[in-house]
Length: 240
Image 1 (tube, rainbow, N blue to C red):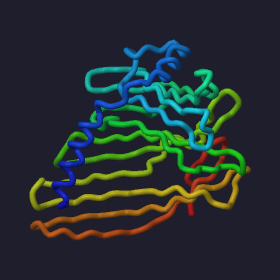
Image 2: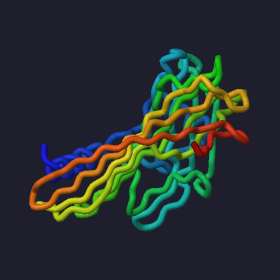
Image 3: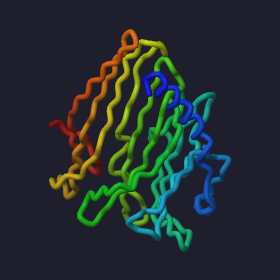
């Protein structure tokens, strides 16, 4: 698939997927407990049973905090629910004023839950919430994904990594035979080293650049690394 067809197909798939995300019966029960109505939310609901705790389900409730023409921001409601009792076991809430969950020209097209084995302490496993964003522009396509990691803390969830960009893609094209495109894809790997009793997170970064002139494409791949260390209550990027 050439570059331009890839861009068009990606846009079509994304627009198709935006109709998904209606709340399940379990999510509706949780919303009742939190006194939230469906009308107050965007249709970006997502939930996933935690593979390491089959009796628990993580749910993200996308409640609108502020809405204007072609723009909305979301309060962050992330909950872990007991599947049998239907009651909230752990809850995280952050106002739209500081959550960073904003949809405008770069809009949120999906929210997903990541249950990769983020073992941040010997007996503590985090799960991720990923915000997927993109633009509508075909000449200047852009998309990015941001992950937040959560761990249980009593009856609450603690956000230990907030809105860390793990993927970005963008550039410029005439939709014919010229393009300068780039992408940056990050893989998070739990380290054996610790900072403040939390395992460091090593990040492998793959950089891709595609240049097309006169319909001839050249691709350049490079690699870099980052490291995330737990400092002052959350993971932060540290210099190598």
